[in-house]
Image 1 (cartoon, rainbow, N blue to C red):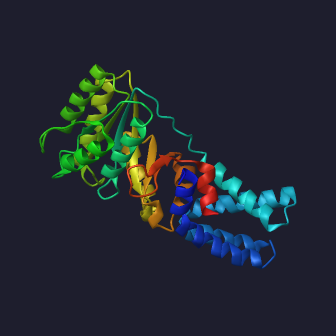
Image 2 (tube, rainbow, N blue to C red):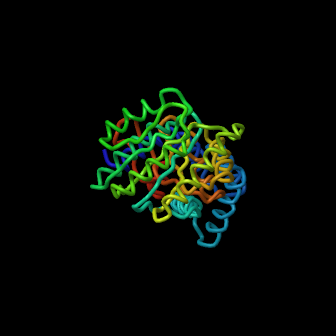
Image 3 (cartoon, helix red, strand yellow):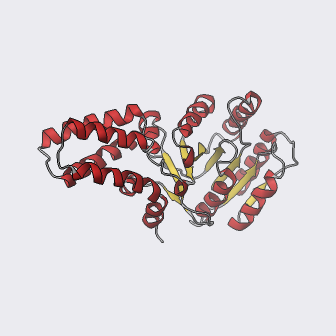
Length: 298
């Protein structure tokens, strides 16, 4: 199954929720103020924020009037283009080697799994990949990551549980530079903003990368669980303020009807989705495609 098939399948719950309500709305056959009010409610119920939903509907109202659109198909196409433009306020991120990718996120979002899948995908393009097991906080974290590294057939650099994460990062950078590794992926401990010591640790690791490997491109990606919907937006805001977030890895999209939150998250925070997990298998991850995503929800 290609990416479009995977993303379309993953978004089925979201699409079903939106499409069913849109079908009822369009069946009334009249594009008036009641139509726009109900459309706004549909968008909000799909976890697009109130602010973004209002902006989308206002833009649609203007386009329908300006272009003299009267057919349902024309309205849907106009709505899709507005959604695409909203998501594209977040400039797409191109990750190019030599690169250090620090993966951030709270516990339970699928961070370890995402790192394994990402390592597999990047190494599949005849590039060299290494993983730094810098989550020395959680028991058995490095063991779990080792399993994924072995599955992806990539090198892993790790240390004893309780070690200084920045020292692991330092060792991994030393190895990556010596071996001219294309991609170094750094795992970090799952953390919440209330754990100030862990946030400071994250900042320290960032400084280590910037100091020890300035010639590499440094990307900080946050892993988000799509089933949390708008709550995921809060996580981006907190981590963005702490260390700066360059992009998003989206997981568990197939388990939610709240996929609409991606629209407001990208539109308001201007942080792009870079990768999407589309299942449980090692190769169930791919680059995010805006148009395919919108086709998948509308």
